[in-house]
Image (cartoon, rainbow, N blue to C red):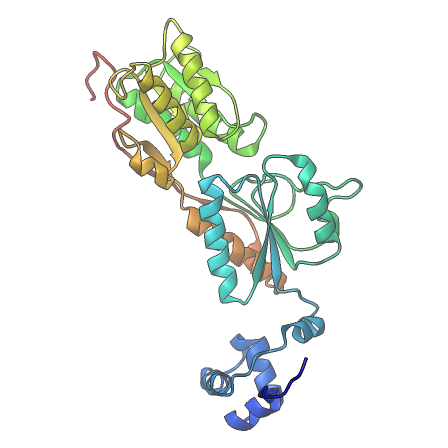
Length: 348
């Protein structure tokens, strides 16, 4: 192919930026690689020269020198869950500020998907890992933890793993859910769970049970199990409709299940909250548009993502003092239309 007529653009080098800024090439390199370690005035002058010259840093060469990929792996159980999508936005916002990119491992609740991402970490194609799946992924022979890379767990803690956990106060909020229903006069309860055995599910069910028992309610809590999905709430509602003596207060361990439950029971003629009060957990956007609007505990999802990303970056950069211990963020109870006094009971 003829190149006649093409305009050759001269490659802008780091020396050109240095000459334009009136500093050494070493200073330009330092500004681009470690901006926090230079004076604000110097940073401003160099970045203005970068802008004016159109210089583009050679990230591949920089990464070879620093032995960093400038990439983080985020392991998510199921990306269609709006909770994880919101957390991921917080992660991305924080990492972008430090020039990091993201690789997302969507497990789709299938453990067999873990193997290829374990290999990716063992081959050190990322600088660190954020885990939202509640466990350290396993390969055919080795664990992701064998890579020795910085790791942080978010949303679901991984107890006794030796890595920081960025979570919410699951147990305290779930206990408050029971207390709130008791205050409304409810004495019979149902609980829509997540997958049994997970940290989140264990904490939320324990908290709810503690609140029920503290109120002196002796009847066993009806429990319906399944993953955090709309379909779990639908199945719980179908079981609820078959019961002769139905609970009047239901707590769902996630908003998706609560929404599936409400839609199904209302289709069968059950009134919400007159016949059954329902509380969710998460505070996803969908909960704002249910009819009635869903009473729920709102998680600080964006903050979870940013906090987890900050903790991981500090580990990557060797700032160990900033990552000691776990972070447990509070939740906000949103009192809305799906909860009300039990029939024949006045709130008081």
